[in-house]
Length: 336
Image (cartoon, rainbow, N blue to C red; front, side, top):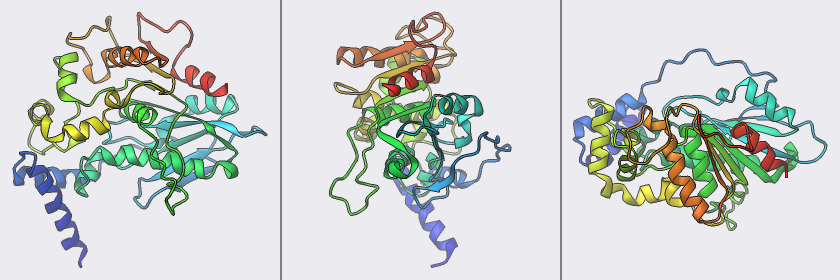
């Protein structure tokens, strides 16, 4: 089969998925084709020190790679995994940044930063819902790293995740979701745990339920792309409205992939910071930046605390009294 025919079949298949959600075939094809276009990227920053292991592949897709920095500790070291943001549509593992990397390594920890498939790539390949790709990629990356625990001098029982925005949402999903390890698998990587011992995040979306998000913040417009409601000829508000109206058709996916739905008793300690919050977090009020509002953190904090889980919320005007920021929390929790 020629590459052109193969890619045409992918487009048609993904278009059919969207059409089933009430999107016209023309709109669906346009969305898929737009998602296949490569985004122009600025030169990536140079990380110092360079990774001990660079671009280690945990899957077959070009974006299924990680960078890993080995600790200088003589004993197996805790690990901080960074998951970049960008709405699951952009961004790169170099987003870990030199300042964050210096703090992690300086504490005697190991560090890893992952790339994952974007939702537009998932949509183009017919993955339903598109958000499944980045979330399951992150889980697989955790398993891959744990499979190298002895070689890389990692303590597999002290693994935490951090990230911003979409990377923060992914970190929370990993923290709350039941372990995806398959003890009976013939794949040694798949037998590894996906669970985290702590998560500390910045600007996290804690829910992906459009009804819930709009109830919390009336001006919310984020999340339609994660469930395949994106088309090339509509703006974000129109996409979200279609997502809101079509919620029932993807409710089973929302329950699987929304962190709030997965959160509950027995989850690891969580720290959520929202540095762009410009007023007290109040449910039901319009927010300047609803996608990264502390209202997300407030609602999740209440649910977790009611379940007996440590959940801290920090934003300007309501800073956490014990930890300076998310990384401070993560390093101290994993050091224990």
